[in-house]
Image 1 (cartoon, helix red, strand yellow):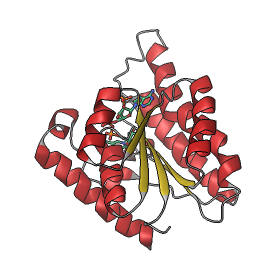
Image 2 (cartoon, rainbow, N blue to C red; image 1 turned 30 degrees about the vertical axis):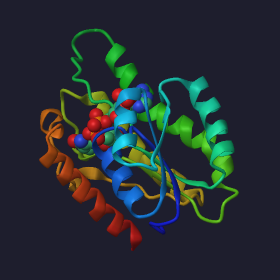
Image 3 (tube, helix red, strand yellow; image 1 turned 90 degrees about the horizontal axis):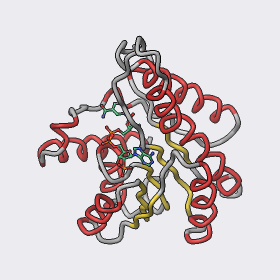
Image 4 (cartoon, rainbow, N blue to C red; image 1 turned 90 degrees about the vertical axis):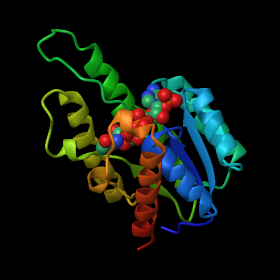
Length: 209
Ligand SMILES: NC(=O)c1ccc[n+]([C@@H]2O[C@H](COP(=O)([O-])OP(=O)(O)OC[C@H]3O[C@@H](n4cnc5c(N)ncnc54)[C@H](OP(=O)(O)O)[C@@H]3O)[C@@H](O)[C@H]2O)c1
């Protein structure tokens, strides 16, 4: 993958790994579009990184994904990379008898990326160079008992990215298990933000190979 001169859409680009990649890729001369649901968070990133564009997209909403995909391609015909970083990790009690959390996790972590990728693939398939990045997790390979559905969605995302590769799409499955992973509380500190950014830069160096 060329790491300069792309037009890159990043879901969940207002925080964490998505934000780190947005900042690092923007600094390397890419047009970066970040999305999420929290407009204030997105606006703050836009202010801190002039040139980054933000749009609202709730990946839980299939109709919004379809409308968004068509309008973003109209607005940015050069769009050639999508990084699916939006995700949730709620604790789950399998003994509760309630599948609400499990369904929400599947909707955001699995159906969201699948729907967005499917909506963008007709456009990507017309380009000479494009890339789809999905973020799996070590938990997809070694599941954690209190986040069973999260772990399952990450295993599924890994499998899905392999199928896409087999369909002659240019895909770069990315396991984030080799990243330093701060807790939610640590993430707000400037030091953690710098560390995430540093690791996103290393990831970009890796993608260049
Ligand atoms: N950090 C880790 O320890 C770790 C480890 C392995 C894998 N990962 C994966 O890496 C990705 C990013 O994780 P992170 O830790 O950077 O998470 P994060 O800081 O919590 O960011 C997640 C982002 O997803 C967005 N999001 C959540 N639900 C959404 C929805 N329905 N529609 C649109 N955006 C939504 C949130 O933005 P809004 O609130 O604005 O919607 C948020 O900016 C996730 O897929 C996660 O599973 C993380």
